Image (tube, rainbow, N blue to C red; front, side, top):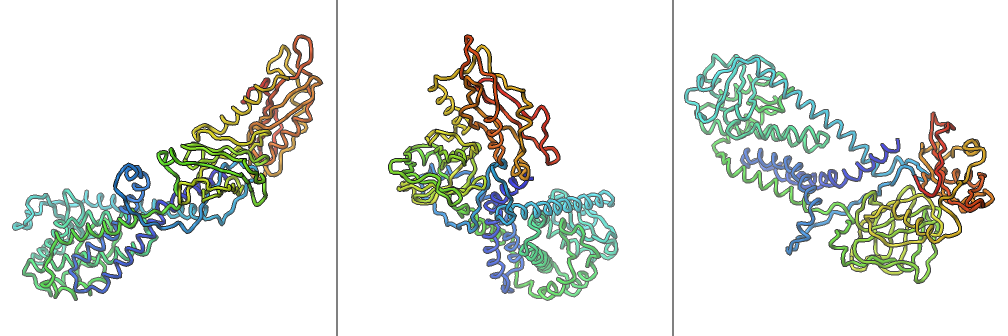
Length: 597
C-alpha cells in the first residue's frame, strides 16, 4: 500500500512539471488564438482550418519540447549565447516523501502530489482506453476495406488529374459511407446510390480528391490521437468540432471554384450524404459530416469566389502557429528551484556556520559559534540528528537521494519520512547563488551515538559512510576483541530473545517489516554493553530490538582461558503475518563477530 502511495506521489511530482503546467500554458495560448479566430468570418476557411489544426497539434509538440529543454540544459551551459527564459513559478509546493519504512508512516490524502498523482493515473487509464477505441475503429475500417469491391479510380473518372498516385474507389451501403481512408494508397468509399448518377458521382469524387491532395487524412489521424490522449480538455473537443466544419467548408469552396458545378446541385448532394453513423469517423475524412454543419457550409458557398485557396500560404500559417504556441511552453521554467549542475558546483562554496537544527518545530541542535562546515565542489553534508537518525544533504542529485526541499539563503528546509527539517546558518549556505536551489536528501533512520557531522562526496553511499564511521570508531578501541577462541554464547538460545519481543503497535499499523541489526559488547560477566542499532527500520522496531538485546545474558567469550570483552552483533527480523508478529524460529537471527549482514 505504502509503495503505491509513494509511486503515486512520484507520478504527481513528475506530471505536474512534465504535463500539467505545459498544458496550462497551452490552454492560455490556444484559448487566445481561438478567440482571435472566432469572429474572423471574412478569413479564408482554409486558413481557419489549418490555424485551428496547428493550435491543437502544438500541444504534443509543446510538451515534447519542454521535456527536451529540461533534459538537455548543458546545451545552454556550454554556449556563449545568453538565452532568455520566462519563468512560471510552480504555485504548488510539492515535496516528495521519503522511504516508506520511516519511523512513523501516515497517509495525508489531501497532499497535492498524491492528489495530482491519482488524478493523472485515472486520466491516463481513460486515455489508454480512448487510444484502444481508436485502434478498434481503425481495425473496423480495415475490416470494411477487405470486404469492398475495389476498382481503380481512373476506370471511373477518366479525366482524373492525380495520375501520379494510386487511388482506389469502392461503392458500399455501409452506414459509415462515404469516407476517404488511407494515405499511401487512399481509398474513396462512396454509397452505391451515386454509382448510376454521373454528376453527383463527379462532385463527390472531386471533393474526396481535394482531401487527398491536401493530406487531410494525415492531419485527421494526428488530431484523433491528440483528442484520444487529451479527451478531458474542453478546448480539444471544441477545436476538433471547428476543424471538421472548416475543413469541409474549405474543401467545398475549392471544389466549386475549380469546377462548373452549381451550388444548388452541390448543396442537394450534401443533404443526401449525411451519414447515419459516425462511429469510426475520426479516422477518415469525408464530404459528409454532421447535419448541424450543413447550414453553415451552404451559407458560405456563395463566397467561394472571394476565397481563392492558397494552400502553401495556409501551410506556412500552420507551421508558424505551431511554433508560436510551442515556444512559450518550451521556454518556460516551470520547475521552480533547480538543482545545480556539477560544473556550477565545482567553484561554488557550500557552507553552514553556527549550525542550528529544528525538526517538526523542536530544536534538536542549539546554535553554537564555530559549529558547522565549509566545502567547495560537488559535495554532500552528513548530519546526525540524534534520535531522528542521520541525514545526507546535497545540492546535487545523488543515488537514493530524493528532491525533498530547497536551499534558500541561510536556510536548508526539507521534508522526509514525516520529518519537517530546518537547518539554519548564520551565513548564506550558497553565497554565490542568488536563487533558491533544490536540495537532495537521504535519511538513515537509526541514531548513531558519537557521530556529529561531516563532508564527503554525494556519490558515497550513506550506508557506506556510516559503516566507515563505525569502523573508524572500532579501530580506536583496544579494550575488546572481535574474534576469540570461544565466542560468547546466548544463554537459553534464541528462545530467550523470542519470548520477550513485542511487535510495536506503530510498526504493525504502518505495515513495517524488516531486519534490525544491533551491535554491542559482551563483557567479562556476559552482560551487554554499549548496545546500539546500526541498521534499523523505524516504527518502534529499533527501540524494541534494542530493549530485548540489552536484557540478554551471555556466557562470556574466552581468550587464553580468561573471559574477555567481545564485540558482537545480532539481527532481529520483524515480520508480519495476518497483522500479528510471527515468533517463528527464522524471525530472530544472530551474527557472531562484528560483521553487519
